[in-house]
Image (cartoon, rainbow over all chains, first blue to last red; front, top):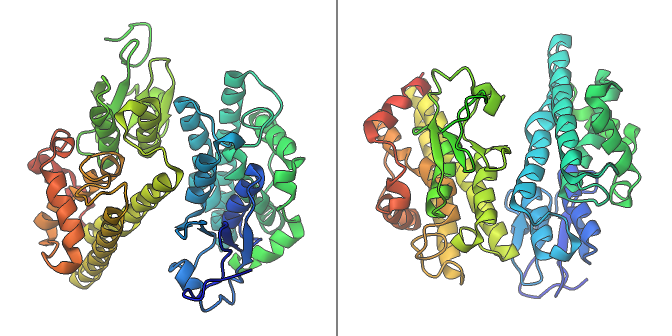
Length: 235
Length: 235
């Protein structure tokens, strides 16, 4: 891996460089986007507990992921990076071209960002059993919402193969599945159970469908590993 | 306007935007439609006295919500604005270039976290010390936004300003100017103003152009109504 003599951080000349931490669910959005689009890149692993002294030159906020383009520009924010990949490599079909379908996909992703993720960390952090129950119910409410959206979506695309777009991985999975993976910590530490009933059926089918895909398995972590990594959030 | 057999009012075969004139999020949707010159029906929702049917439109009871001619309902102000940009590409609200789009998304995120969110904290802060601390943070945010604007104006898509896309009031303004309008509220309640010095030059150039543009003024609620609507955020 080369670096220009006038810059002070490592990157791949003439290529994409992705600065990530492999177990970080936000960074996994970027990893899965590049994987799904089959775009070559150089991976630079950042130890979040021991950040390299040069990393502020890449991202002053010191977060992962960050992406250095071949032209030298740097992008941050996991959703901006995954959407950049979708826009830059349209042949990968990571987003539909129709305006309404794009909006509906974005709203599906938003359920995870606004309802599931905050309650996921909230459940771990909650000290009292009562608060833990409230946060777990928040997660389940979000999952029911996602389930309804999946049902509506499958009617629209008239396709029952289980992914948002039916048979193809898109940003609907890329931007969300790492957080469903993270739910293992709430299952193990807080006893969360996602029911098998009708209200959750579409969600469970979707999980089963994407879990078999390499876009998922390439970066997914075993439940016990997740539970251990997130132990630090426990009250 | 409405089919009496439906339970909520909407425009048959047209776009219906459920909005509130003083809500900065709803204004994003309004501005997107106006700048793109897309005909639309506005149904005003009094947020302090919501119509009993509104839950049929948006179960979260928020504004804005968009009903498309096909009967689909979209929520989330930026999803709606991006839908308009995607559905009406001739309006050129949003660049088609992947990197330009990513940079614009980062600008909107920066504005939101460093300026818009901080507004509310300045208003809500109970004691003078907290108010001063939040005002300092707000000024830091304005300086960051100022620098980003100046970076953008060096790029080909920015062409020297004063708007994000040079001489065109477009998506970046649609997504941010309603929050910029809140400076009027802060001036009234907290005597806050952005200084006219070098560090704020970019922001002041942008803001000066914004406040005189019909893209801003056409949708802007009158000062008295705006100021009154923010009284409820005071401690």
